[in-house]
Image 1: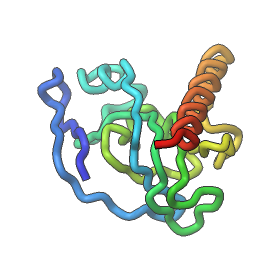
Image 2: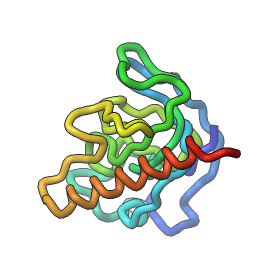
Image 3: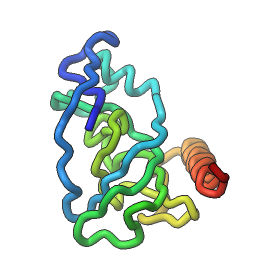
Image 4: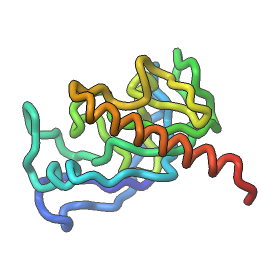
Length: 160
């Protein structure tokens, strides 16, 4: 599996496209093969070395918090998702620079971190977007989730 990894802070030159071993999903996790990822300015800030909430990240880091893809496999105890299902996620269930990984071809994700399926079913409560204290941001995340679900549904239903 290939991923863009970061071993130190700096400019774009510190990003490395490299092979890495991907562990099977652990209990409560799903492995998602990414078909689309989001590029966010917060990723640039992390790469540059700023924008940390409490502590700097532990290197190496794979950036990215938002993606859509297909479930490759599920770990023990996962219900509501199955291999082959199209999903999207926004956020990792923690700070945006920890436990990230959408800048990779495939990555295990906690099933409870906010995956939602193409049919609009949320696999975690309360929703498939990351929680926010700001109502305006919540509305934006809801809209982003709806756009991602709509895009996945169109890809699923369109003839090839």
